Length: 164
Image (cartoon, rainbow, N blue to C red; front, top):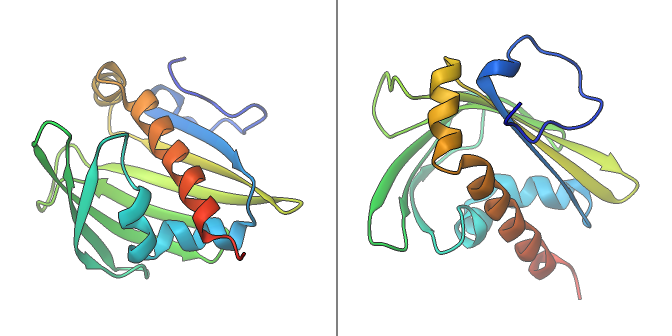
């Protein structure tokens, strides 16, 4: 398995098409959920090391969209679109993620869960691709490492959100 599968998670029948990332944050889940759903926070941490984003549209409600450009450190731009399918505050986000075009053949499905662990938060990101080949392509260019970099940036940003 090429995923960072969380120990003890239930089988879903999509294991050969998914990437699962998990990280525990030393912050309450309401704060982690806020960082994951509010554009003023997303622009501070979302993306791997060296990447920045510009948000064009953000509506974190069922049926809403987050359209943004991810700017790579090499100057290359990556258009993104997230379409929210389920928003359960502060427990879960479900969305489809792809490039900013309609009917993107590379679009994938994402479920983010925010589990309370006594004031800490276990975030699990389950990305399910249409085929195992699509998952393998994402994995081959470093999707797991880049995803973990993104979660590390979230951890750093959460430190700035704490009340003093």
